[in-house]
Image 1 (cartoon, rainbow, N blue to C red):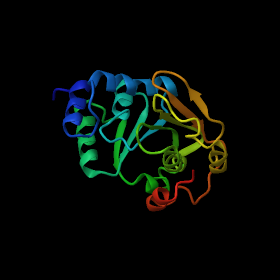
Image 2 (image 1 turned 30 degrees about the vertical axis):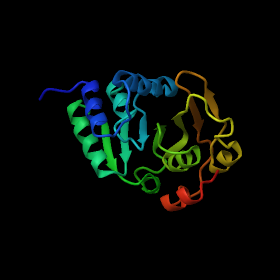
Image 3 (image 1 turned 90 degrees about the vertical axis):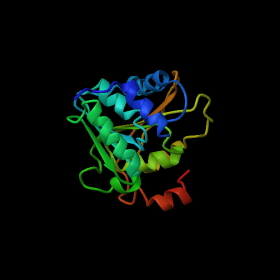
Image 4 (image 1 turned 45 degrees about the horizontal axis):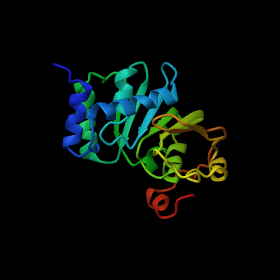
Length: 204
């Protein structure tokens, strides 16, 4: 079977409305910047939180087949697309697709505290992203989030993040911008809360 190129996969994703408008090559380069920001070690396990149309997870999996990547999304339509994209790109050995609520998967034994890192691109606010990611990360694992071009200085609340088990924020003033933060203490067994509670009452 002929494998598709990354650009062809994301053209399909864009037509389906799973990624936003704009130049496909620029979308791919933005996704590649996540690798530069994270510098994942060989063989490490990473989750693309709310993978949607496959950015950045499919690009990360394509460029780094030595990594173990899980693409997570709650939409069956999107994960059906991602399943086919993984096949089209020949990534079946290293990339897994899960259809599940991000607030649920962090309480499952095979996923809770088992990831070396979590990528997030346009998933939600910092509070929502951090709470959904915290259940997935092992101690020392990192959350790497792409930021808006001109983020508000108070987007991330360090005191609340500390209470969740995270360490110090690292702001990567690159183009694009990123925030990186590691889990340094075990988090509460109550986190993440249900999606309904996370949305209704974010922690910050």
